[in-house]
Image (cartoon, rainbow, N blue to C red; front, side, top):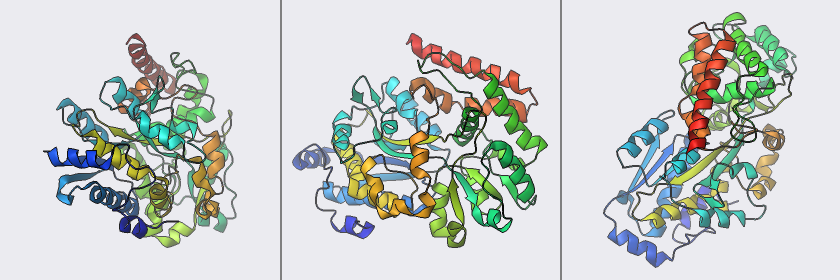
Length: 438
């Protein structure tokens, strides 16, 4: 496997996914460019990954003939990317290229902001094994690609295996067992069972939707038109979350105001036993706390009446239309997504994300015990609007934290679960209806 040093040393040569334009065209664009190449990347919540991505960006710049001071590279704090993008688009000055989460690409495409990147995605499909289908649903429309799949990752139950083993407790297989295990093992206020994000953030939306699936609920039907949130299963899941918070007290009180880093910090500071999250926590521990890293398990999600299923999130790269020199941004995207470069990001980054390339899972890295359940979770995992697919309406539901507001009705304003679900259903239906009319 190439290392980070290898990638940097060979920065003057083209990578396997070299830019589709001839290099003299890129250099000509550079010579005429009056502005810096603006690159926005959200913090990976794993410092080594932030460093690798930035190093690769400047390695690409060297290859493309750009000077370091001609790159405006910004690492955006968690929870800040969305409001910054909204503000930049309103001002007509978005970045040239940005890394964003699921469904936002669909939303920005529907608003006419994104460049066509079909040529890049078609080239990626030719990499041995091709791309996971889950990585493509959010980036394609009518046979064209308007975003580039960067990663695809399940949300495992991040678990303090040392605490379970010391108490001779088996990992919980159902949510009912999960509650009992939390109650038995927690030692409040120093140690609480479940670090569930409950703030108005997308971690909250995703954690809640995962439990809604387990209880038979869903956001929308497979036709991508019929909103289905208001159901017995959704009400049961919302009531269970409320019971975890108020009755069983296995979720920290402060979780109601957490941003997307709150659950990470709670686990990394040893204040909770379980967290439902992508592997940013695990990757961060590789650098910050090797002892905790070695006793952290990435387990399947507990089952509800409708079974056990994990969330699968996708990361995408988007190029905004305002960019007068798109080949530079395209070149960076291709450099990052070249398999040998992405492998460095993924594996030296300790699995912060899973690669979208099927063929990348044959390395020794993915055979480590920590990733024992990864492939199963990836194959049975669902994206937020399942059984529907991600689209612009999904993007607005996530961008407005509709599910989080639904939980706040119950947890903060003491609404009945059914009333809160019914209100959220109406809001989602209004959003989906608006996009159907468009």
